[in-house]
Length: 264
Image 1 (spheres, helix red, strand yellow):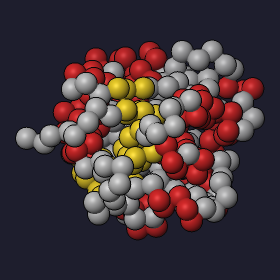
Image 2: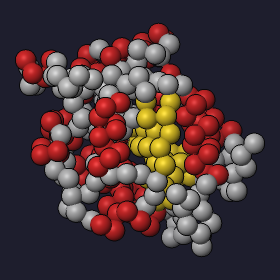
Image 3: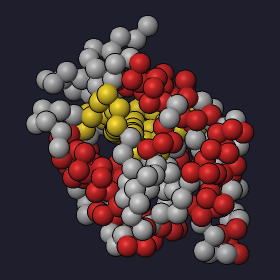
Image 4: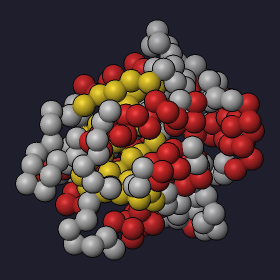
């Protein structure tokens, strides 16, 4: 049985259209072990009432996450976990708060290196879910405005085909529009120092949103320290919560002492 050396602080970052509520299965599992868990709503997400049309920059969108990290005591660090487009928020946080992060964990997430241009590297600023395994494009080819984020809002089953029906119903009721243009246009200056933060990637092997082929492409472009796999859809913390929980506990057990280094 893995032994966690200390009680840690997990910060869970949702993707587009979600909110801190999406982690309702994982949060109590971590808290039961005594860990602290924060699930911030990014600007206009979850219970934040900001009109997404008023958000002009990615900095504004991520401000709740930045506020949380900036108010941590001087010697405190977090395990930062991001899902889907929340991976872009993780890159943003790594760029701005490397000294506040033990490890960044990308869960079926967009993992793009600092210095990337969303317009240049990926269509619509994120991996295009309409790129099928054979490399051909689907709906995006006939309708360039038909993006994965909008499709997920209209059809939650697209990303949750392995989830229980009650979870699909919950997501369909609580998901909301977000500042799509701001996320699509996100870009950060190159920062080689960002690699001081260890990264772990959790692959979702039956993902229809960020398909395995796209996940592999991101892993090759910016190799993380460790890679895990879950036999899940795009929402592994919903369809396979115990699997994700087990991986997070493994990661927590490997968090180095203050004078140590991250195990590769």
